Image (cartoon, rainbow, N blue to C red; front, side, top):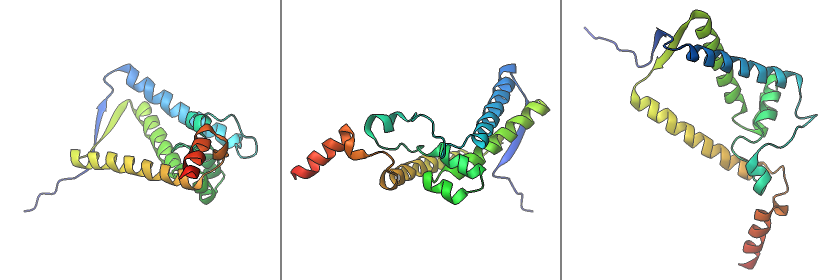
Length: 165
């Protein structure tokens, strides 16, 4: 007789502290609020301030640059256009929605759901996340040039160093 063991399982338990339930309620609310704001406000037609410190400092996009516009495009049913602003826009939106749903169910049921996976799977998922973020940043550095990099102090230094060789 072969005994099957599940690699991934879900463990349900009551919240240990009231603050855990409040955190989940707040998190689901913030995600809902963010999605609601992006559903109403279109950052492509009415852009807001640039909040990326890396872009402000050196004119280079960070791995998350373009995420607001990408998520807004996803909400307007344009996932391919969203991926041009940031390839992670679609997965980030899907993960945020799934997380908000999970947290809302946990708050409603009064029970916390833990997804239990073996340590090797968890470690490899974390590594894959770091690699994905690094690859996304390389993509952003190569293909996303929204600000004139040549006019920033780093761009001028780069031009001077490249021109001297």
